[in-house]
Each structure stands twice: as C-alpha cells, then as structure tokens.
Image (cartoon, rainbow, N blue to C red; front, side):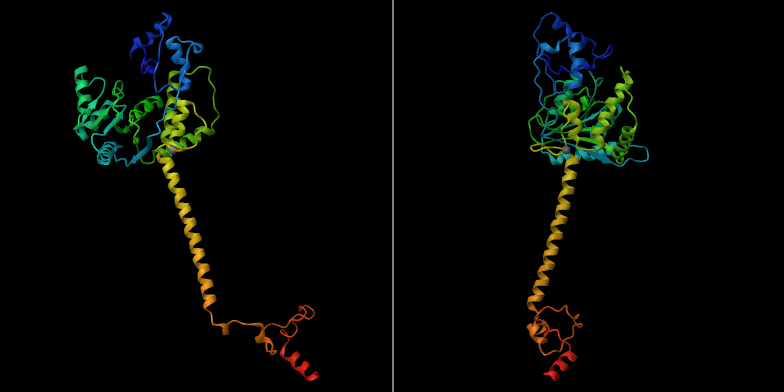
Length: 362
Ligand SMILES: [Zn+2]
C-alpha cells in the first residue's frame, strides 16, 4: 500500500530520486493500492507513467478534493515601506485565531521560504520546521511540542506534512508565494480532518487580488499560443497562474480549487453543506444588503400610502365636494365644451349666465 502516492511526481534526480524507481514493483507483478488526496486528473497520465501502470489495469475511486468543512479565504494586510508587513499580519491573525478556537486546537503557518519561516516563528515564539532544522530526533521533538497543550502553533515549510494526521488543526495559514495548487491543496487539507469547521487562509498585501485580476483579464484577451511540448519554465508559469486565479478573488475560491484538483468545471460557488469561502460570503452579504434595501423601500412606500389613507379618512365631510353642492348653478369649474357634456350632467355643469337665462326663459 502506497500512501501519499503523489510524491513521486515531485521527485527529481536531486530530490527523493528513489521515488521514481517504485514503478519496478508493478513490473514484478506486485498488487498495489495507491492512496492520495492530491492527484489532479491531468496529472494521472504522468503518475501512471512513473508507476508503470496501464490505465486499463486500474480501478479508480475518486472523491472531491476540497473539504466541505474548510472555509477558504484571503486576508489582506498593509505593506510597510520595506514591502513587509506579513510578519505583523501573521502574528495578529494567529493571536485572533488562538482566541477564536479553544485549546488544544492547532494552527499551522506555511511558507515556501525558510527565512520567512524562521522570522515568523521567532516573532510568534513558536517552533519552526523545515528540512534542515535538525535530524529526525529534533524534528520529532518539534512535532511533539506542537501537539502538546502549550505548543499550538508551528511555522513550517512543506517539509512539515507527511505523517502529520492531527484531527484538530483548525487553521492553516499560507504566507508568501504559493507555487502549486497541488501543494496548496495538500497543505490546506491538513485543516479540519475531524470534520469540524476549519479555515484555510492566505495572507496577501492589500491590492494584490485586484492586480492579479487585471493581469489575468489582459492575458485572457491575448491570443493563445499552443505548444506541442512545454519547457519546465512554461509548466511552472502555468502552475503559478492557477494559484494566482485561486487567490485573485475573481470568483468563488472553490471554483479554481475544484477545477484544478478534480477537473470539475460546473461549479459556480460554495454549495449547501459547505463552509462558504470569503468570496461567497461577500456576495451573499451584498445580496442580503440589497434585499434589505428593497424591503425597507417597500415598507416606506406602504407607510406613505397608509398615511395618505389616514388623512383622507380624517378629513371633515364638509370639506369634501359632493355633486349636490353644485346643484345651485354656482360652479367654479371651467365651462363645458358644448356637446361634450354627458347626458344628465347638464344641470350640474351649467354656468351662472346660462342658468340665469334658463330661469328667465322659464
Ligand atoms: Zn465560495
């Protein structure tokens, strides 16, 4: 059984090179079970190629990658004159979340940079975890300290992950660049394994989301160049663009997450039974506000109508003109156009002179 079986996709001649040799097991006729929560459909052919699996020989069981109990969001911070502000923002966010979620609930802050990992852990006074932080014993000690009641927070690179299956991670924060949706999905997926409400938050400078939206809008208008084969750099750029779309806030976060990780193209927003992402929360709040305004308008108009009705009912009867009051021939209305007065109405609309003459004739 091969758990976290996506890992050979990341192996290179320098990084975990032996992973690529695991395909030999298939050639020797060993029955295999491969388990992973992070294998995008478009990466399946590459995975099968490495593992020397024939698609026809595989039974595939797939369920959605994004977790319904995780609320995905971006939290913005003001950059200072040195282009920083990330560490202060991370400290503030962690402080807030430690209060929000009762102990022992855990928090992981991920950064792709060892320097940032060290800076943030130092500012928070918690452990940092990265590949060269120490030997196996040191790493084990850091993990145990994080799992203890006192050590609720750890700042780490993606070295902190394999073998971590803590059920009560309530918040996963990403600080600094994210290079791959697959890594992001894997890391953010460490939150809420117990099924309770959890959060995956990306920290970003104010204005970055809008800038990414504009850049992608411009890129979308440019003609697409098709390549038969792509260079490693081009592949990296495409991976980067997928992450940028996710964090840009152009749509529901789950739209881009599911599109990449599950190949799902029909999602529009967070659905029933799913924790809403920040984009869906904002759009729901806007709809609620508009509905509130509509209801308030209807109520105001109704009240206006009621007031008019009340004033008409309260008006003294003498002030309301009745047709009988005109029967004496004194009428202030303009003269009727001859021949246009309806039958029987002649008396009530007759002018003074006409009435006098009519009296004289009679
Ligand atoms: Zn959403």
